[in-house]
Length: 432
Image 1 (cartoon, rainbow, N blue to C red):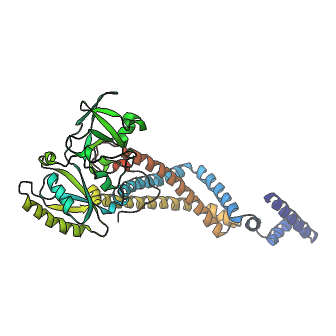
Image 2 (image 1 turned 30 degrees about the vertical axis):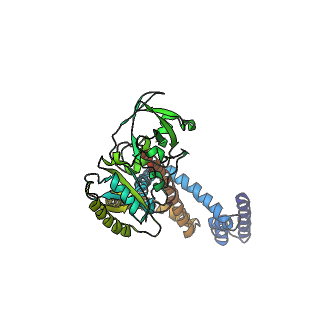
Image 3 (image 1 turned 180 degrees about the vertical axis):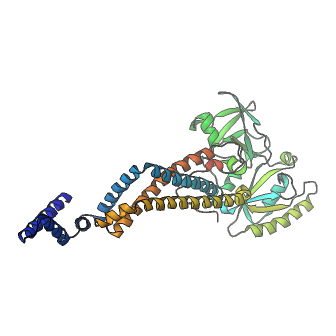
């Protein structure tokens, strides 16, 4: 169509020149008057292009081709601009991914807003609770549908695995029978503990964490029901937890839990003193404030009735506050700092574009003289800016994905949920 237009315009121009020559003009004057009568040739071409086909699409393709030619010609500016945008976007996305995981994204449990952390204000340093006091709180409260617990004092590498491969020191976590049901977590394979297995010296059974199952047993589903040798005694594997459940990331940051064992809530474990970390699930309609008032009274009644036990002063708070509450001020400060860095990046990139535009004034003047309208020139500049921004965004996304993967694999850092940090395409709910 452009070739047909050129041919038609050339024919019209030649006819106009011949007519002027017949009127007695010189050849040069005839051409000049023909150009004046026909108007700007570039303007005519632009008007014709906009009136045919898909004008927006055609113009966009032309602008993109021209943009890539310009950017390729000015490779130094292009590289520098993309690096500035990419580094700013990559750093901002990485930090936001951390903030999203720790402060915004809900905890990986069922209805996490109703989960409450219950600690003993009279116990130091771990604020743990004695078994007898825990049982009384669980049995006599009216605010919680259930209370669960785990042993707050477990030794690293306290369980020895032998037989069927290289011996290995494992980290095991004793949990109450209902601990997983309080969190709303179900095993990926097999089942959880039953009442008989949670009595003192009951059958020796274990539930494997997903990471340990994948690493040691190559994700073999046939491991459920088989026996493994733990501490020189056979133990039956009854289940495997799902990949989404990472106990250590939530309750023991910087550590690793390989398997779970039953925690007997009996007089034998009660004799050990304050050993239990306690969580609870509020009943529908109950609030932390009302539960706190009830537990304050219960704590006094329990101690008055059982002076032989350790003192207890129940203190309640949201589980997400216990998990990441101490990090919240630092994370808010960090995200604000990154926001300032992003503003600096935008300002620097804008200055680069303005400086480049100033050096192209001659080019813009020539294009305007040839018939390019103001809207076309503005559209061209916007296209170049958008292309640069998109290239910077792609680089930033690559850097963010790489950065979050590196953070997620940093072992030994005392930051909760660090292993689940990733670039998230959406916000699936919020803690607030």
